[in-house]
Length: 138
Image (tube, rainbow, N blue to C red; front, side, top):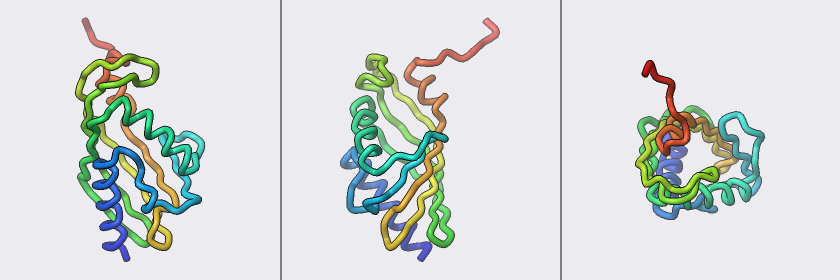
């Protein structure tokens, strides 16, 4: 089962990178989505949020660095590359390329994602588009 679940996540990520929207066929209708400690959202809210994110980063690519599976869970360590070509969090496009890392825990039920927990490096993302300046000794 673990290898099947890892294969499912590989296909999902490949399709996500091609379509730039969450592909419905991989998710249970009642899927819950958790991002960086925020309250859970349903799948439709996740799809809506994804549209805005992909509008800001239309060339976004997920790079799977590691997949670990146990039981119904798959843990994915990834890095993401993208170019800021649209408004992001109210800030106009910068044209800057960004790279950030993240970890997602996917729960698979009956061959579909029933929930996932995504935690990614928001500081690296915001810094990459110029939204955060790091403190320096200068």
